[in-house]
Length: 242
Image (cartoon, rainbow, N blue to C red):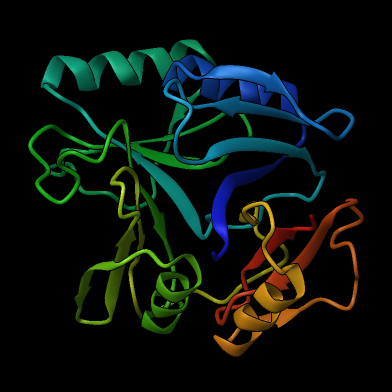
């Protein structure tokens, strides 16, 4: 058995407040986290990944390397999602989108970008409300995560890649070059967990063989029970210890 995507983690100035925002937008249940002042929200059906909100005071510099694309079933549904986000403290932002583009670009109360996609987007059909985690990254990193999670590539063209769990759900996409240089720690990161009985050291070794690197900080970012690693593009991710 290989690593599973346990959570997508946000570094947040006020984790519980940001959890409340995303709970309100997505309709996911809020749950307490294992660390003090941390929080999480859980998908309604209990499948797939959770979203965790961890304390972090680093100032935001530039656009995040990853953002959620939320899907819409109809124009009215898109308007309702936008209105709900604004009611919970989100705001409209300009990241260079064109007036004729159908998606709406917003930021959560911590400044993290996300998009509400117009209905009829065929690439995100049948993915669920969180259609994609859209990432800035190379083709190499798309290949790495496909192997790391054992999720098949569902798009591989012009150096753009996308993967999706064999069970369906949210796609993870990488836009290919040009990739903006990384400045500081990412606000969004992956947290991986291993099935019971898995050889943790062997799995870390497998990730290293695929192109990951390991932080010298044994428990990663000062948090107990997780080791900090980096994918081939230098993005932080964590692997839970048993």
